[in-house]
Image (tube, rainbow, N blue to C red; front, side, top):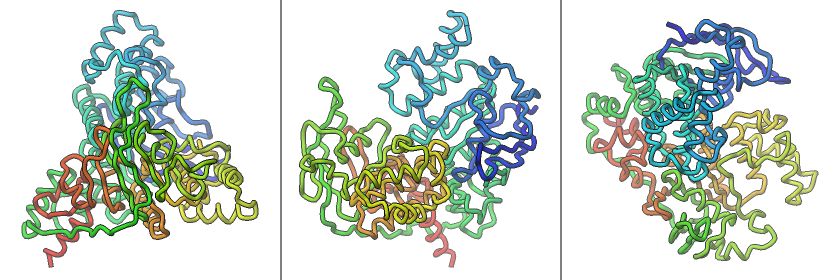
Length: 552
């Protein structure tokens, strides 16, 4: 039975040139797990938010949305609040109270649920989600993974019929993201909960979905079962975001069933390319580079009586190197970037830039053609109502003559493909578009060293490829790039060196081939698929290349 029907839905934001959604027709059955994917700005989030009146965007809407046969506009507010749950991509934006147990009870209290029932429901959800161990903690002490799990539990306590999720794993490390998706699958299978999930990280989601909606330019490109969509996407730019097993399969001319998971991908290789076992993919040679940035014996804690967040950190970064730092949520990666950027002061150890202590750079000179940081939340970068006005304000503040403003802005905007976003309000952009504009603003300062905190957050696969290409261009211009990221494939494709952060310090590092081949969880899906079959292959194209060689 259909729980949700979308008929001829179109939507246009105020003063927008084109429709954000154009003629959407979709039906979702009770208990289905539906994945929504597509490029940044294609309308995924707009569609999701229109399904729930309380968070629907303002604009011109035509068509019809029916929930359980009732038009969404006429749906009772209490029914909507209880039965249509929503979890966004930024965990901090949804938490409203100071304690975990307060957050779990908050929704029920606002609905006027009787106290004993609140205790019962909250206790059950805390046990189901494993929250009982941090039930009395402050919400601002939680990691991103814990916060997102708390958001999900706070929604589930109202016993929704449909769960709407907008990129909930975008800020989670690989292990936390996989656990979160597994929890959604459990809710779907065990409770019959209807799940509609917008997501860019498709590796773990595609295999568990019943249906996939692939969107492009505000329209539904495909709406079908996952394996069918995978075949239809062959040759489409969206193909680059599909699970690794699918991309390897689509790149090879083999008549077989399309694999979706790592296990199916391994079986596919062993069945069709038995001769490649023992093949070796050549490891990149590390270039000797002059040290441009160095951390030695660095220790940092946020308060005197708290434990160290960064403890005995030693790090050397070569001039023109691209270094990716990986690790779990709350391990100290972002704090390390802040220390390198001079925003947080260590109580022990030294940071040197070009052989000079960063503490000796006075009067803001550290940030004048030396170093720039892109924070995890790109919204914090913007201070004006238009992107171009924001860029102009920065150029004025750094003393760039007004006669150069337009040429500088146009040059960097053209390079990033954001010319059409310059007249937009930064908060009206999608997460990926905000990230691009924030990075453009960063480059206007012409830094030697670029620090990036989760640069691919909110990016679709095509945008990641563009970003990888741009970072290599910047590297060829002599820029040094340090990126903290949860995106294994991005790190493997763009980095000269990868490092694993744990317990306040870097515990292992190496070329992408040696680093990812040695890890079981902090590694790429392509590495898991080809492990013990092809030595050193960590990207889909590397696996495919070895297979094509053997097939000649």
